[in-house]
Amino acid sequence: RKEVEQDPGPFNVPEGATVAFNCTYSNSASQSFFWYRQDCRKEPKLLMSVYSSGNEDGRFTAQLNRASQYISLLIRDSKLSDSATYLCVVNPADSWGKLQFGAGTQVVVTP
Amino acid sequence: DTAVSQTPKYLVTQMGNDKSIKCEQNLGHDTMYWYKQDSKKFLKIMFSYNNKELIINETVPNRFSPKSPDKAHLNLHINSLELGDSAVYFCASSQAVSTYGYTFGSGTRLTVV
Image 1: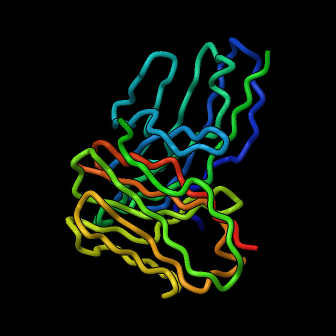
Image 2: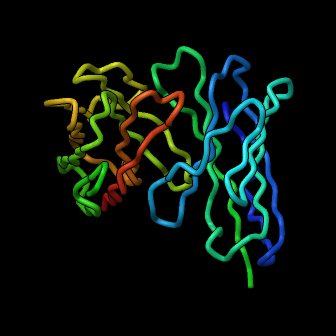
């Protein structure tokens, strides 16, 4: 089983619509969680951290479910510029800073 | 100002050659990393240095040798390049990774022919 699993997509989303996707992780002792965004042929960039109580940043909402070991990302009012691959990232306990990356979920926003 | 900069951006070389990739960060971070992203887009850690000391050394062929002359620099030297080494190599740095995650460089796209 992979340490971090994501649906690769693509999720084809009409502009203005809402899209949501999940990621599951295997290490129940994982301490912190992030969503990164990676555009084609670019480096991953931090989108947002994920807090236990859930958090929102503009049109983006992240949720953490420790009991079921998954995190989710919801994008409201999708923009064409939201088209990217979204990487789920987990910081396991005692990892010496070694973050675990999912392979990414591709989102394509269409006009 | 570029926070994490890598050079070169592109590298095309023949099998058997030796090449180096350089990375520098001006964020004052203590920890730097090398990650490899293969054709399936999966990011895998290779090495990590904290204040010039090697702290993570994953199962990587010993043809790959990192070097950190100071905490702002982490270079990667690869000997006897093989076709399977073709990938994008990302340098990253962090401070308080649990809170802030990594900052990545723009990547080096290595193609071995």
